[in-house]
Length: 44
Image 1 (cartoon, rainbow, N blue to C red):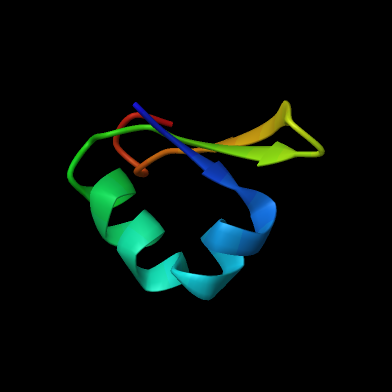
Image 2 (cartoon, helix red, strand yellow):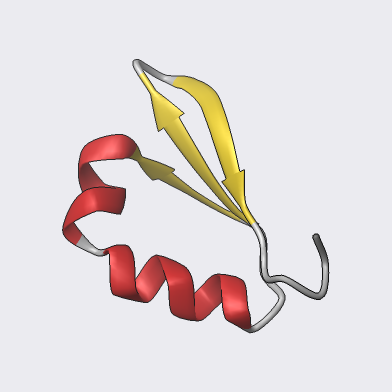
């Protein structure tokens, strides 16, 4: 599971999605606090 700051996630959204598609959950933080998790559809 990788953690991204919101600004970094926006700048590298394609990479974030690719990693999620591989089954690796992606956590996005906002102001240092976990805000959302991006998952592939099969996991969801």
